[in-house]
Every structure is written in C-alpha cells, then in structure tokens.
Image 1 (tube, rainbow, N blue to C red):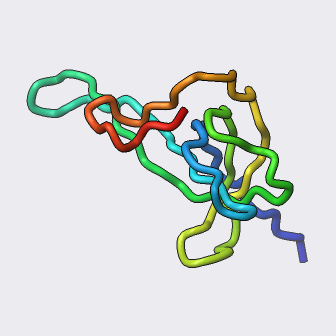
Image 2: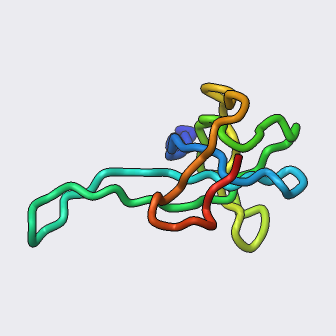
Length: 104
C-alpha cells in the first residue's frame, strides 16, 4: 500500500502584536479585500495565537506562522520563521482608528 503524505500546512505572514505570554505570541495578519457594494479595497486584520517554543519574538517582528495541531483552546498555529526583527522605538498599530491597540 502506498504511503500517504500529509498536505503542506497553510502559512500566513504577519506582525507580532503581543508577546507577554510564555511560549505564545499574538500575530496580526492583514489582508486587502474588495468591498462588494462600493468596489473599494479595505484592509481586514485578524489575530492568531501562535506557539513560540524559544520565546524569540518580540512586539513588532514580522513572522511567518503555519498551521499546527491544537495546543490549547485558542492556539492552533506555530511560529515558522522570523522574517524581520523589530526596530527600536517603532510603534505597531493594528488599526489606526483604535487607540488601545498600539504598543511601543
């Protein structure tokens, strides 16, 4: 019988918005979607909790996360790579209209 290969896990690219938890980061993934009625493009963001085994990420890092087995109630993603480390004194803004979603 032929061996079955697992399908490649989905990946997403985003920015770390929180790293306060132990071995867990929160990644905001932004995408542009066309609004059906007005045919304008809007930016939609969604936050994912991801497993960071070595606690190597900090707020502002650009990372790639991939799907994984469920590790907790909300954590179903795993850190794959860090694309770019955060620069010092740069504010991360998830949504410009909300003031409480900023970190420096």
